[in-house]
Image 1 (cartoon, helix red, strand yellow):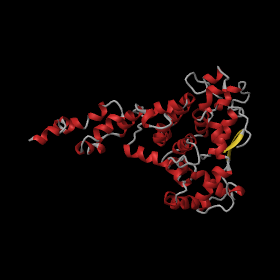
Image 2 (cartoon, rainbow, N blue to C red; image 1 turned 120 degrees about the vertical axis):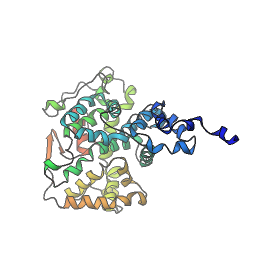
Image 3 (tube, rainbow, N blue to C red; image 1 turned 90 degrees about the horizontal axis):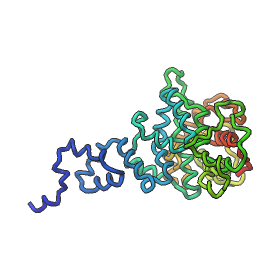
Image 4 (tube, rainbow, N blue to C red; image 1 turned 90 degrees about the vertical axis):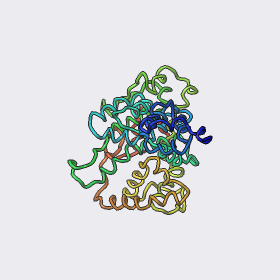
Length: 353
C-alpha cells in the first residue's frame, strides 16, 4: 500500500483526459517534464499532436530552438512550402507576407489552416543535422530553410508526368527571390542611398518593399553599421555559395563520391549536368547537409538518391532554360543565382567572396 503514495495523481484521471493535458501546458519544458515523470506519461508521446508540440516549442524559442526563429522555421519550412503549392492564393499570401521577414514565416507556421507540426524526435534529428564545423550556424540554417522550402520543386521539375497529374506545382521564382531578399536580409542596404535599381530589371513585381514590421524598416532610418550587425546575412551567404574552396569542393565530393585532388583548381561542375546536380544536392534541406559531412557514414546513405538524380539529369537532352531578371536564374531552385538576383534588388556592391 505504501508504494501507492508515489504514484502521480494524474494517473488516477481517465485516459481520455490525460491525453488532453499537453494542450494546456505553457511551453515545451513543461511537456518534457510531464513525459519524463514516469513511464505511463512517457507512453503518451505518440498521442500528442505535432501541432501542439510546435506551439509549445515556439513558446520557448530562445532556450529550445537555436537561432530563433530561424531554426523553428527550418523544422517546418517544408510544410509551409507544400501549403503554398496547394493554390495560387496560398502562394500569393506567402509572397505578400515575406516583406515582414522571418517572423512572418514563424507566425505562419503556427496558423491552424497551414497545418504545420513537429514531433520531439524530429526536433532532435534536426539538431543533429547541423554541423557548424566549417560554416557558421546562420549560414547552414539559411541554406537548410531554402532547401526545405523549395527543394521539393525538383520532384516536379524532373517528373515526366503531364502538368494535370503532377502532385504539386512548382513555386515561383518570385517567391524564392522574396524569401532571400527579406528573410536573409543585408544591412548594407541601409548604408547606401535608396537603391536606383529596385524593380527586378523593370518588373514591378520585384520592387523592394520596406514593410513597417520588416527587417529593413530601421535601415531606412539609421546608417550606423554597428547597429545592424545581425543583418549581414545575404552577403555572407552569397560569399559562401560562390566560394569554390569552402563550399564547392564539398558538393563536388558529394556528387562524385571522390575526394578532390586539388581543391584550389575546383570548378563548379565540369558540365552543365554536373552543375545542375550540385544545385539539386544543395536544396535538400537540413538532412541534406549530411552530404557535406566529413563522416562517410553520414554521406553514403545519400548515394542511391544522388545516382537517381544523376540518371534523370543524364536523360535531359539540353540544359534548362533560364529566367532573365537582370541576372539569370532558373525555373528550378537555384540558390546561387537567386542570391545574385536578391543582391541586385538590394543594390549591393558584389565584390566576390
